Image 1: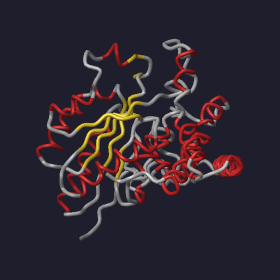
Image 2 (image 1 turned 45 degrees about the vertical axis):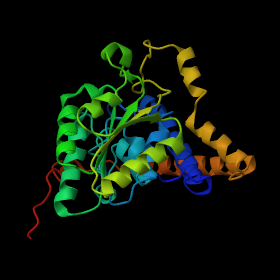
Image 3 (image 1 turned 90 degrees about the vertical axis):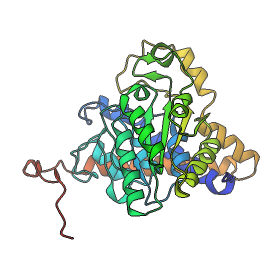
Image 4 (image 1 turned 60 degrees about the vertical axis):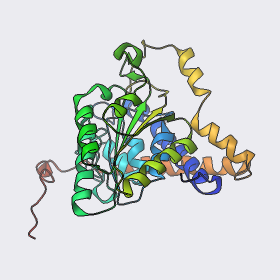
Length: 326
C-alpha cells in the first residue's frame, strides 16, 4: 500500500481541501443572490474523499461524477475561476455556460462530466475503463456516487461487467447517510454497503471518508490494482455533508445537534492537527495559507462574475462531438 506522507500529500491535501471548502461555502450565497440558475449542491465536510482519491490519480485518468460534483472536478485539477464561471452559466466556463452546476465536463482533465441523473456516472466510468482496456492503456476510471445511488440498478450491472471483464474501474461510494432527505437506514435492510460489491466478486473496502490519509491509502491501493490489470475495486467511504442536500434545503429531516456532532470529525481540522503535531506546518503558516486561499477563491469568483453570458446564437454549438477522420 502507498504510504501517506505529511510533507507531500498532507500539505497538498490540506490546501486543496481548504480551497474547495471556501469555494463551496460561497455556493448558497451565490444561489440566494440569483446568480445560479437551477439548483446547486455543496459538499462542505466531504472534501477528503475527492481530494484523497485525486491525489492517487494521474492527469490522464478519468472520473465520472454526480450532481454534487464541484469538489471532484476541482480536486482533479480544474481551474477554480473557470469552474465558478460554469456554475454561473458564463461563457468562460468549461462548457461555455451550458453545463451549469450539475453538468460540468473537462475533457483535458479526464472529467467525463458531473451528472444530474442519479447513478449515471457509474455506467460512464465503467465504459471509460472498458475503453482503456481495449486500447491497451494503463489508465483507470473512477465513479463517484452516493448512498442513494447505490440503489440504482446500474450499479449491479456495472459491478458484474467490471468483475467479469476485469476492468480498471474504481467505484467510490460517498456515504453521507442521506439521499436528499431519506436516511440510509430507512432505505436498505443491509447498511453495510460494501457487501454489495463482494456479492459480484468486486474487492470491497470500507473507510473513514473524513480522514484524508485513509482515503488516499485506500484509493492508492485500488489504483495500483487497476493499473496492474487486477480489475475493479469498490470503496465505501463514510462521510457527512454539513449543508443541506441543495442550496435552500430546509433540512427538517435532521437535527442541528447531529450536524454539529459530525463536525467534531472535520477532515480539515483533523489533518491540520496531525500536520502541526508532526511539524509539517505551523499555526502561523496555516494562517497565511488560509488568507491566500480566501484571496484566490475571491479572485475566482470575481473572474466568474465578470465573465459574459454566452451568445444565444451559440445555443446549438458544442452539442455533438465532431467526427474525426482516421
